[in-house]
Image (cartoon, rainbow, N blue to C red; front, side):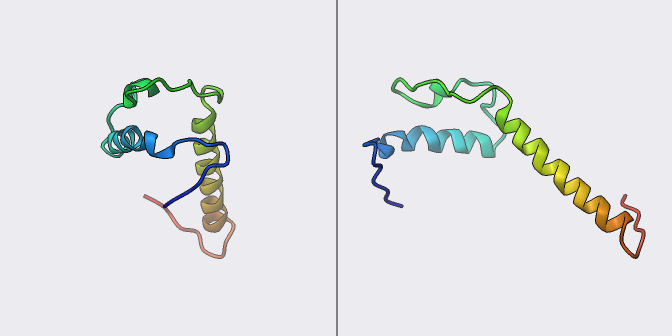
Length: 82
């Protein structure tokens, strides 16, 4: 999908590295590698705090578990999940 970045960033430049990183992610590989490993040119370090993304995932699944609990235990039927 074409996108013209108003900041002038060259998105195509990142295609190869992002593709390799995504392939590694989908295959459960490369999590221990630094971001720079995926690119053959210098990249800036990330600016988000350590654990930020993991925190979003934990919050998402916590909410899902609570919703499931509400449906099962506060609804008409009590269901046992094995």
